[in-house]
Length: 458
Image (cartoon, rainbow, N blue to C red; front, side, top):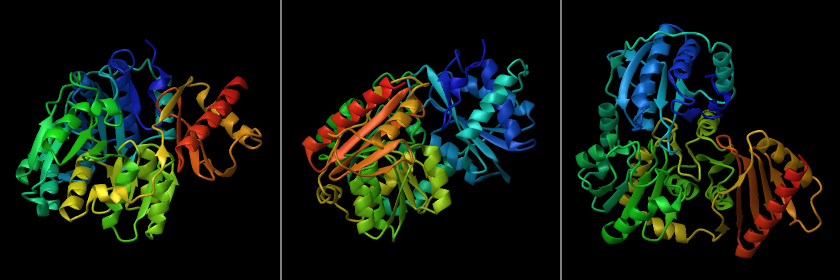
């Protein structure tokens, strides 16, 4: 079976177990990644709750060993714990790279690799070049070699959190968490217990078949159970995706989106620089500027935002979907567990979250709306949409300006519309916002008509 180029994505490597991620392909991924890190370097590996993750760990280990790397095995961990391994010593040894084996919030047959080299994400063109090398050498045979050293990253991570948030000890609010049978509770309840929190957990047991609900907290229906428990017994609730790098925060009044979280978190930072993706509400950008913060709009994608944070020395970054990145008092990567404690810290310090959100300007925003297309056509459609916007139809809303950092974000007089190509699936992602609900629907209708025209031009 030949190796499928499509597994090499913008932000990571991802595919279906056995069909695309199998002994042959994963050993080669390990070997050629090991070449990128260079010989005699240290690579730490962690994995999520999927039943096939340990087997992929073994294949990856064989490939890395063949490349002359030293492999450290941290076992089942959350993605942010995996990232944390890049910042600590293991008996005097520091890791040069980490690989997280995870399918994140994808269905259970999927898996993948999130890669960090020298504390920076390995992504974009680097992944595509890696894929080309692997496909050009796919007849290469790699022997089994499971030589590795087991390491404990969870204990130092837990200790860091307990120390960092010691002021929250005996926090008196009733907390509800929904781990979605992912890996958040490889650490989170141990931190809660050491801080003597009053909490109840749903679906904390890691189970890669995800028997209770799909582990994607950005989808409303997946929050049904945690909302019921919050209503009955809690003051605030948190839900996590499969690998615990995305968070949902719920009060009795709000399901707080990532851009709203950024506004809350930034309240305790002095003149911060905050990066948002193109799907973030204009309210976030305007409110940050009004407060004296510097707001930057950039491309969607956890790897893109980490790199932009480093480049701009930003304090915070966010995606609407719940990726929250703290450089302020932290390391600049997305960590839903750390974000939990920063939110609890705000409440502990007297901030009324609901009141703060009540005071924001009211806008009407759609959820992300996905338009089915193909891998081959999605970027071509974006190019056609850009061309059509140079001379839009006579009934098209008045355009104030266009931002094309990632797809097309069209700013209108009372709102905006976004069309971008997903980097991970064969869809276009659209979103619309206005101060007027009818206008938001009108923007959606007019932009969708433009997309259909663009499709017809292919």
